[in-house]
Length: 118
Image (cartoon, rainbow, N blue to C red; front, side):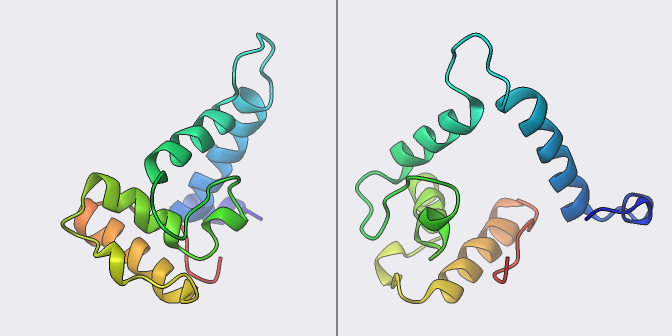
């Protein structure tokens, strides 16, 4: 749960989580025009980005990303020079997640919004 002091202290994980929840509520969940929701569109994009990668079968935002292979595959698709995908083992979930999150932060400048434990 986010508290007032989290915002005042500038806790980026909680603030971004709150913003994402607001977006989900007002933009993604309410698709009155029959268009594909943003959530479904993002899943479709992740499916296309990871197509052909061993150990990856994107179907949802939970179990499909749990072992870290999908995160690494997405990074590898666009920057194969910074992830050696062929060395990853699906059973090493914590190591895979740590690698993806670290590379995203250090090499791509993407803030680390998740910890391996999340």
